Length: 200
Image (tube, rainbow, N blue to C red; front, side, top):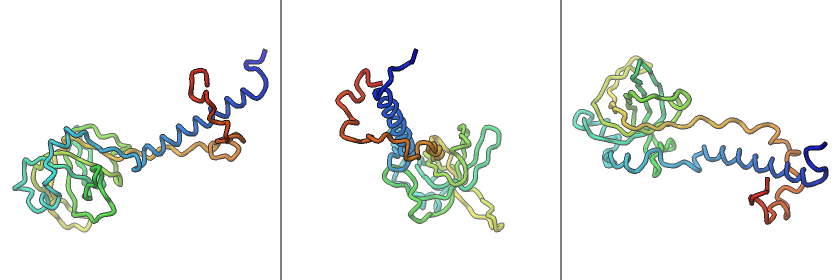
């Protein structure tokens, strides 16, 4: 005995199900893009930091700003994990309106984040953007690739957020022109019962 009655209704169902699946995949891809980026921190966490203190102030006066709560961002250059403590070297970039680093603008320097938070390896890695709310704990010396030593500010991280990994590629069969039903997006596709109980 067949598990479904023969005829067009089953194929209409399977076609709509495939299109619904495609919409879900496309939405998940775009939700990971900057177009849908939400602020990295809740408002109550942002209020803990002094938004008037900019990176240039911290870079020039790390000793006098010790103990101040700040919010910074940039792109990860290097990360070192030793036991429970992680050290992140970051190339600073100015924060945009939604508190994400704007890598189209010039960088003002480098800073270091020290944290005992768990840092997922797929997010916290070189090349990814990172934002931090934390406390200035003073300067440290960083040895550059050329052997030169530079002083950079250190931030003890209280709240951290890093760029999510790239979404997986869209399945190849969903890119096939034959994937779409001939009536896709036609006048009868979104019928009165679309997404109503009994549609699936």
